[in-house]
Image (cartoon, rainbow, N blue to C red; front, side):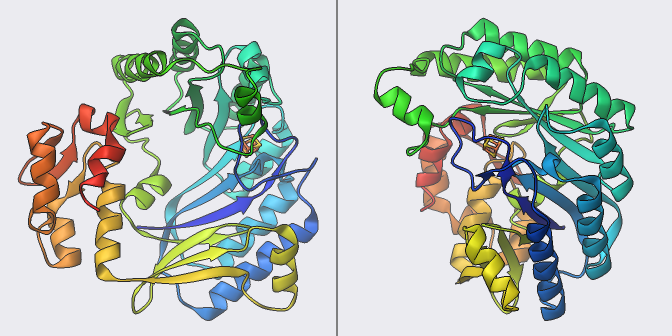
Length: 378
Ligand code: SF4
């Protein structure tokens, strides 16, 4: 599999916890689209990309700030310049309160067939506490509009560990999302990042996060609840109805190739070596380099086979199905149990691993303690 990622780094306002590369703006300037199309053209002309692509993903930022015409321009360029397979999964992230019905229609006409809606919580006070721009009612309007427009593959993002959040509030949110019968749920713990307003408020004692035990209870309850409602956990934080796993993200976790366009986007492709690219992360520099006809690269890293193998393990162990032994053997010429025999021994001692003839995977305890588990592979 291979994918294409496009970064739309604009949001109406920054959320209090956000450290993603995004800039407060009411819309997406056309000059950003021009730069994106130039980058797409440069990469296509260089010709160093996989033979075919299975997914296209618009992330952000808030891609639903794109107008229909802007989305059409980008999708036309992507399809013109790269071989996209029939039936490709084409996703975009949308934020409630930004995606007008006519925009949703235009996105669909441009080829988008999967939406990921950032809800986070159905409790307006919690949404306010983390600086989200929308209410729970606006989420419902967006979901209804998306369905009426014909979208039938929809993810909803929810969060736990929010300031002042109770277990019951988190369960309410999950219940509402499940009752709405969306196809996929991403359930993340809030990560407190330095240099964000939320971090400053917590440091100064204005805001308080739930304690660690409560966060762990939320995590446990969330997994049990989503599974009891028919959403199988296929990655640490991702749950899907059968057949609705996010193919774009599966490709990341399988350490597949992908191109990335836009400010701060990353790409990984196999040239002679497995090679990782990272774009510059300021708008000025991004647009300036493209105006001069140069790719806006901040760095290019050639990975040694040992690094590539380690990344496969790190990413593969996020998946509940784990690392497929045959695929690993084919890619690296060695069985994963031989390549990492000491690390696996540590996991066995702690009873954190499931080993079969086909795969090795972390069990639920191992997934809970994934950072510690991965430490043995370093
Ligand atoms: S919508 Fe997403 S990217 Fe934008 S500020 Fe909020 S968390 Fe950050």
